[in-house]
Amino acid sequence: MNPQAAPTPGPTLSPVVRERPSARTSDRVYDELVSAIRELRLAPGASLSETDLAVRLHVSRTPVREALARLADAGLVHVVPQVGTRVGLISLHEVEVARFIRESLEVSAFEVACADEAPDVSALRELLERQEHSLRAEDYNAFFAADEALHREIFALSGYLGAWQTVQRSKLQLDRLRRLTLPDADGARVLIDEHRAIVDALERADVPAGRALISRHARRAKDLAPSLHARFPDYFTD
Image 1 (cartoon, rainbow, N blue to C red):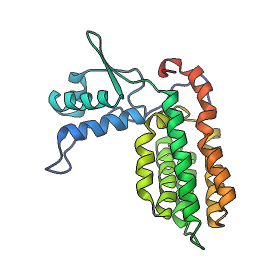
Image 2: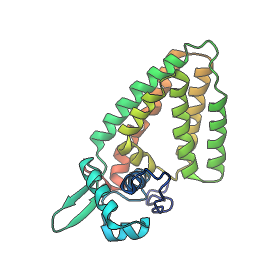
Image 3: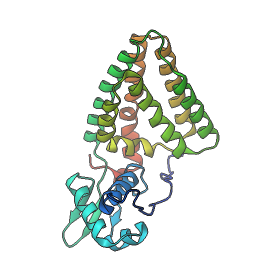
């Protein structure tokens, strides 16, 4: 990893389109801004303007204003009177809470999935190949998406997919920290190797090995936090 490199996010913002007649435009704006914050398309501390966002999202200012109010309530943006609105910084405390939730629930999901005498790991194998392809192509957005899909599949195999939704809602700060590690071919290779070991353990229904592997994998972000804080001090609150 180049120690001086800044994150390389994808396209900044995507125009908001109503997918359903009943969908509120402000909900679509909110979802797009949450995704942009999660993926570092809107960097921690970035200044936000209602007018600018409305132009970039192809909507009026009213749904943008409503979405920003919701983001402020969720602590994802901060409004400073007479100064403006900025994207919230990454909280290392919230990163650690998310890590705890993810590790605890994923270990449990793995154990339940192992109760099946012959867990079907074919989808997980396909996702490993997708990660390999993304790494070769240096497509780190696709790599991250395959990473998410792989962990989601473990919850799906357990029959507790709703628990993954709980994990997903809790880990926006964690995901932002994880995104700061990309692009990093060496780190991505380590992640794939860890994923492969987890899938192998699941195929063997090896609960002790899986528990240890998932815990170590989940704690990688915690181990990387100090160096990321040092590289990007303006992105963190604690």
